[in-house]
Length: 263
Image (cartoon, one colour):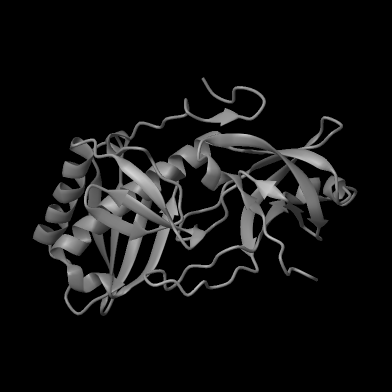
């Protein structure tokens, strides 16, 4: 397989609220389609991937259940130790739709569309997780170096740490209060692109800057007041989780290249 010079155009970075766009099939695998461009965010940085459908020229649609980044490489940028850039994105096809996908030829023009509510919920979860992370960095900076796991899901997020001291109830409460203060201020969120590579991105909120390639809100207020909880995972291992029962899921900004997706 020759992948030199080939990369998937990441429409989700060009416009994070683009939900449906045109594409061309580049390659067909046993259980996936690779397109020349996509609005589907692949799993990465702890964030679960988008799901959706690929619309065919004959009006049929096949479902993809995962978007996977493949064959990326490390750019060796200072401050981005774990990032991979470029590469291609595979759309893993639902098992029931693979017989249809098996007949699709390279060069076929299609449209790829994501599940908007899923993206909106993951976007909110990822931004909320950053607010909690900032609280951890404020009250337990030693734990940041011991971070070994992160999961951004539809209705919450978690961080796993290797630490010598457990998170006390007072510290957990302080972290929660810190994150909720950022929510109450409706702090603006922006994402900057590293000048040396467009796939290296930086999440910014007030004076905080965190390398992150995920999808994010425009401001913190939609998160609503959060709850942060602690769980012991065993000797020297701690987990913090966050939930946001008052979250406001915003579907209105999402749109298509050709038609309105949400109102």
